Length: 429
Ligand SMILES: NC(=O)c1ccc[n+]([C@@H]2O[C@H](COP(=O)([O-])OP(=O)(O)OC[C@H]3O[C@@H](n4cnc5c(N)ncnc54)[C@H](OP(=O)(O)O)[C@@H]3O)[C@@H](O)[C@H]2O)c1
Image 1 (cartoon, rainbow, N blue to C red):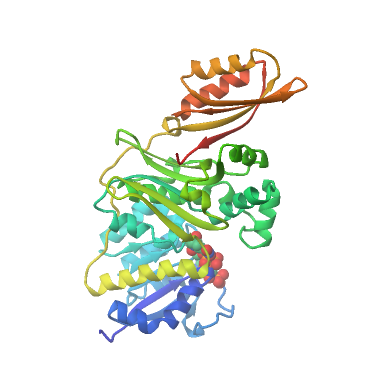
Image 2 (cartoon, protein in one colour; image 1 turned 135 degrees about the horizontal axis):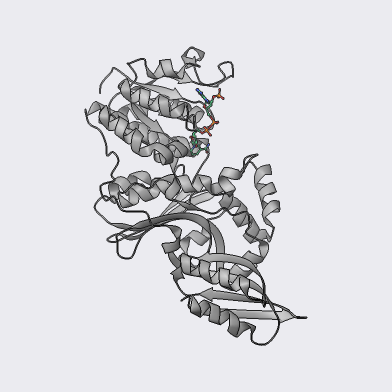
């Protein structure tokens, strides 16, 4: 074993960074044996230097992250600050000064992954970010390495623990959205401002990263169609249950049937209770991967939290240190397929549409005609009503999002349709 240690700069010592530092210290001997050299924490950059940080030598703490990454003797920079700046500049500066980088920063990788990979390549360094998608769950490495010889056709995942906690609470207790959100906030599963989670921004960043890696193509954050889950109601759950389904906020990355394009989207969807993702409870994450040769694979576990996320960061740290000792770099960006990302209108799936209609003869025929005119074939219809008002629940066969959109627009124009109560996609069948 090499006795000269590999030097690690830790940028950020919050929820994740403090756990990274703790595990580096408590498992130092094991990490050294696995890497083939000891790893030394050479500096810790934070915003508030006076905060007491258990287990961290105060002499290592600095507010000057730039000076730390420019030192020139740092082998690996671990970026767990989050956000776009200063993280982006610190990472590119680290490459320019000879360090490899491990990051947990989904927002930055989703937005600037291509440029950061190019900077890593330019300097012959590694950029690893297993922790950026689904916390502790090994996902980036299985997609990048274990499945490198296969052809992934679909990635379907629950990649946001907060929204899964809320939807699970609505499903199991019958609570409405606000009540379930309040519970999630009280228990620490939702942040004071939950927008990034409940509006699907966090999941969309992860979908962009997953789609890019799975399909060897560049998928930008703007390419991901995003709908939040704040409009999901207790009535939607009741409808889902009648169909033998539940509702999850899903990140769905798909290769088109002809293989010539891909799509990436995040939205709430009904999935059958028999689907493995339906049983992912509370704040857990899971990702279902369908590939040509391997078939169906499921990755499951804690998608956030200091210690689980630090586990993924440490796994990357070991890999990057091994590469460094071997004078090599691991796999970089793989975007050779350069497939176009199709717009949402081209996505094909099934739909559950709930309509408030007048309770009089001929309404069902009128509604059915509108579906037929737009080429959307109906699978089942359920009608109930009294006192002149009725509700119609239509479940369709597979149709394009554009065709469904046209259908709904035409339905809204019918005198007999009082309103479109909800539209939910049906996935996982
Ligand atoms: N928390 C999770 O469960 C989780 C899961 C997966 C991925 N991630 C990702 O991990 C990253 C870190 O998340 P976190 O939850 O650990 O965040 P956090 O608890 O807010 O910690 C952020 C750390 O960065 C430091 N910091 C902020 N601005 C800085 C600056 N300009 N210069 C130097 N240090 C600065 C903060 O310093 P002070 O301590 O002085 O405030 C703090 O130590 C994010 O990219 C996040 O998306 C987190």
